[in-house]
Image (cartoon, rainbow, N blue to C red; front, top):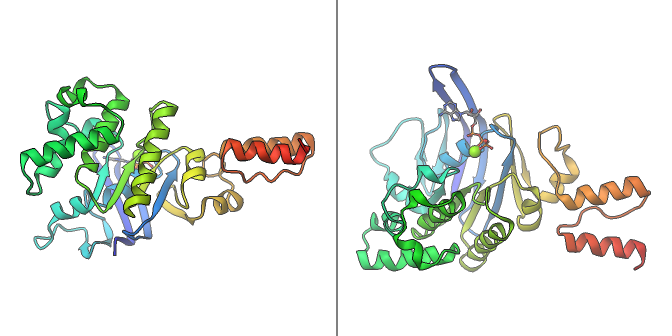
Length: 286
Ligand SMILES: Nc1ncnc2c1ncn2[C@@H]1O[C@H](COP(=O)(O)OP(=O)(O)OP(=O)(O)O)[C@@H](O)[C@H]1O
Ligand SMILES: [Mg+2]
């Protein structure tokens, strides 16, 4: 089941710009079972707009979506329980400021679970667990979210969604602005959740190194359209990413450079720095 986009387009209308088509004719299927998907694309290509459709935060201007059996069209339907869709598909916003509004971190994380008929004490336990999962200790529970650093806010908003225990998690640039260690902690947490619970996770990112190392399916948005849906390595082989204002993973860039400059024949498709080093050693017979 999961999420299916059928020919979905979305237009923003603003006084200054008039109509702006942010996503166009999107066809896409995301199952709720064990997918780990990266969503990439240049700035303004429509990634966040696409993500907001996945839990019916916004409705398509044309086309339709099916989310866990609910048909979402341009009109709000009285028959659909949008709250239950948001429990099944958890969306972490790109800018956590829009997601945090309670006066303590604990209350903020408890807010989601409390909407779904659990006791205060149960919600408190969930909040503490979720906070620890994202790498923050209990001293944060009483802090005001407003006074946290950007990276801490991001982690708290992620904890808020984890505490709801959704079937599908959609994370809009969860690692942007974090230090390298923080990035790894969170990516390993998402991978762990995916592997242990089989939940599907969709992550928007600009980081091609992460895409290559962690994901087995990548979606590429370009100028409001979905132009690729498949394996990362195939993407790097098939498409000229520079035309799409995207980058290649560092391993591929460095090994390609070495091939050109030193006239070598290295296999450039290495996921990690360690793999790239092994390939260089192999070629140099070290
Ligand atoms: N509320 C809005 N009103 C008008 N236009 C909007 C609005 N929100 C987004 N847009 C426009 O829609 C397009 C797609 O925006 P979106 O936020 O989906 O891009 P994105 O791929 O997430 O970009 P980024 O990588 O910068 O986060 C952009 O050109 C943006 O200017
Ligand atoms: Mg965005």
